[in-house]
Image 1 (cartoon, each protein chain N blue to C red):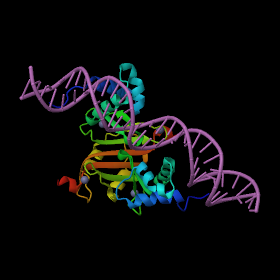
Image 2 (tube, each protein chain N blue to C red):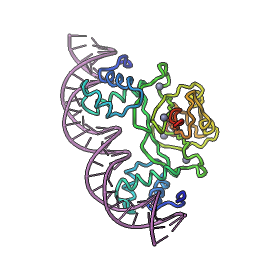
Image 3 (cartoon, chains in turn blue, yellow, cyan, red):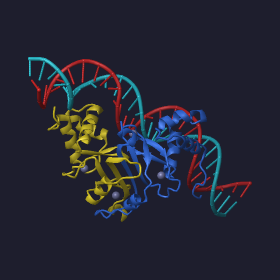
Length: 132
Length: 132
DNA sequence: TGTATATTGTTATAATATAACGTTATGTAA
DNA sequence: TTACATAACGTTATATTATAACAATATACA
Ligand SMILES: [Zn+2]
Ligand SMILES: [Zn+2]
Ligand SMILES: [Zn+2]
Ligand SMILES: [Zn+2]
């Protein structure tokens, strides 16, 4: 069986919903909003999310337990993610900076560990919130 | 009222326990283990953890919902944290690398956002697990 | 001493996530 | 086509993580 080519029904429904949002969504908020499309139980949402995260279509904002669609259409590095998070309005933006991703992908410390993945979350105040 | 100088009773108990562990601990595992010291409810643990995280004595490993004592005794930058996480044995190490922390603290993207904090989690296989 | 803030103790509950089971769909190869 | 393996689905129950709300006590300090 080769790598999955198409998304399944539930996966499409969830991805669709998350892509339309312009901010991270909580799993249960997704659930409430896709119930009219037939997904009735948390597991249906979580399973779709798991797969979508695995293939890089969706990222999890770990510090917020929330899910956001990948905005880097060419995001080959679905496992190398960086986000900026405004601590006031909670706006989250995926950072797409090749210098940063190169720097982190090549990072080695003295532990002899080679890293295949990373997740970076920056916190601060966005422009809007800073000027309030 | 000036900044807290000493830890409270519950804070000491929790910090003590987390410092003795050499891996991240879950909040409820902490709870079970400090019950003999009088902390009976989740909130007592969470409140102590909150404060300890705030003052940088403890960090939260967001991807694991677990808590680990800060190993950088001189960790002035309690809000600039980086960890390496083995995806096989779950060993977690706090990274203390001044080049990395400088690079990230000075990082600016085109959003005009200045970051006061960050949390970085690297994933891979530790030496031991790689050689299995 | 009076006052503000931090911490505590306690019960209940909210929010997040997974276990376990059986069924159905899809891809691969004989 | 049939057989087999893997992936996805549906469902119920439950585990895990975290906070709300309220009253009491302790601490710092003017
Ligand atoms: Zn992405
Ligand atoms: Zn903002
Ligand atoms: Zn630290
Ligand atoms: Zn390991």
